[in-house]
Image (cartoon, rainbow, N blue to C red; front, top):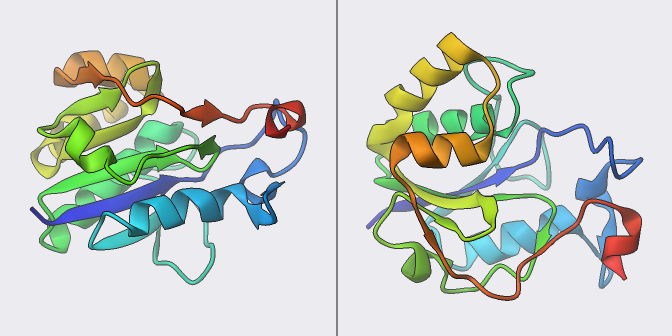
Length: 168
């Protein structure tokens, strides 16, 4: 299966106080940890909502200001256009993404239990997500998971970084 990795990186980092994607953990920006985890299991990786590290970037779709689901929508559309069958997405502020996340989440749609922004999404869901964003505006990842029928699956050891103290 051709899977596109997508780093969701268009957030404002309001709780963090600075650009958390660039906050260092073990000498590397958080976004680098996520991109490396995705590169280890996906044919290619895009960064959604920003430019970073020489990886291809996609602008949030159908437009900015609609939260992380607009990044996922952009990734799903890009995946369709480039012949991928699914998207494995993860936010730029998570540590501990397993090298076997694709296997743990297959078949999709599926999300990491308790980490709604980590998911495996078949590309044929792009139109449904776009329609929902266009009619309802910004929606939560949890709402999208329910609307798409995504199953929660266990991926232990994930750490979401929301504040500088979470890096300790």
